[in-house]
Length: 111
Length: 108
Image (cartoon, rainbow over all chains, first blue to last red; front, side, top):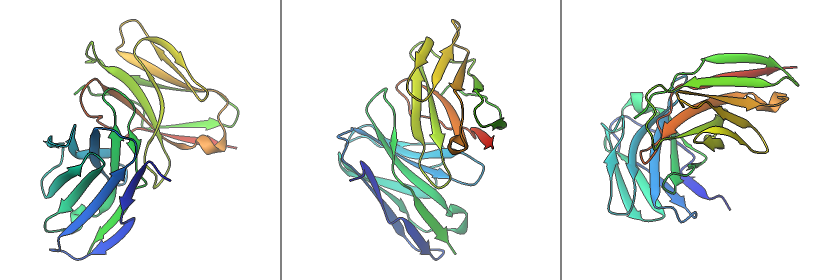
């Protein structure tokens, strides 16, 4: 089984809809992250959490919110989706100072 | 967050050694240097991490000079399957910041 799973893997939604992307991990890591990737732009950090009670904004948090329901679960929500949020979204986990493990990604299209 | 600069793209023939250099002039004392590899539509994968001098594992070597203001990822005898984007990152206790990376194309 994969260490980091993301659901859904692909999603098409309409402008204005609320959508949630979910991430689960079996690594036992305290730290979890959400990134988005647009073609040619590398990965940009949306939100991160260093433990269950900790939530921090990243580079591009506007239009997004997160929930850390448990050590193993970190969800990303788009409150009112817009077309420029069309991107590939990655969840990642890590221990402090150690490598990050990435999920397989969620391809989101907002029409 | 320390910023890194690396070449946008590189080409190499199969079987050659590839060296990708990254500059990080503002690296802090407690920062580590980490390299990731990413294939299209997949999440980045950890390659190697170091603090100073040289680190080697089964897939790559990482060379870091004494001033730590730059680092070089060395991939020995690349194959077509090494075609990917390679990211150089610097961080201590802060989240990783990915730049655009270096797109390596390996040619037969």
